[in-house]
Length: 205
Image (cartoon, rainbow, N blue to C red):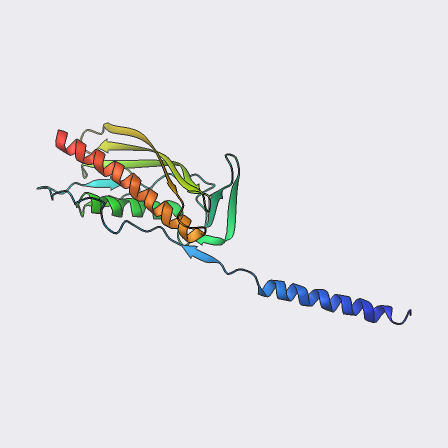
């Protein structure tokens, strides 16, 4: 009976090693996602002005807990989940900024919407600054964007608009692809709010 113990222990060791290898072989692959600009404006495009509207979009300020490669989902008011296997394909703050600029270009029918690293007055009609407070969601729940944004005049260096936006949408589907698609639509909603305000300022000028 004593001589059989080492063989028994070896059998247990080999079985455990086999189970570990099987478990490792079944590790979920990492998936990468990107925000997408709107395909078409929801309404008819505004008429092309005599001089195209020029806007300098400053890089958005994204909270550090969101500005990471892993996609963050909301579990409760004070709890979030960082998913290791569902990630952004590019930095979220840069992606958000570029998509916002692309959407504004489409909504305002202007090819002179640029992303700048810092304020440069006089070259543009407006400067746009966006501070993100929340940009996340729950799988099978809702996606939320809360932010403060400001429009500055390029000529007078004055603040023309300061506004808080709180946008919510039910998440499409029960997976990360649906969450990211919904977040893209929320960026489009914000873009529409900003574009509408810019057009109001243009009509008043």
